[in-house]
Length: 81
Image (tube, rainbow, N blue to C red; front, top):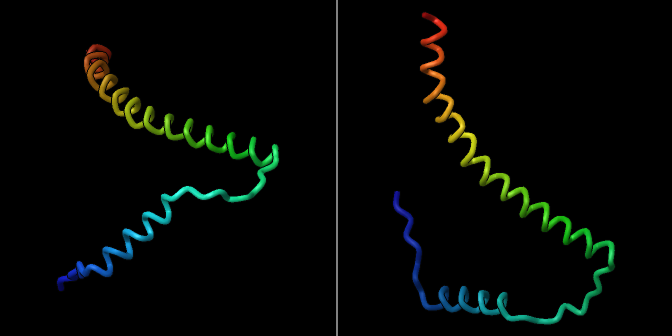
């Protein structure tokens, strides 16, 4: 079963219109108190720090496993002899 997406000009114009409306800067006329502002800043920093730790973990633990595998094999043979 094949699903074909229609490439009609109306669909393209709709997507383009919503994209431009979302990217157009407007003032919100809203007030953020000091507590909510500091909370928003703290959450932004925490998410950024968490993402950084995620990237470090994705690189470090496989690298650590490879290093242990490379050096651990010779030590295991020495202990058995």
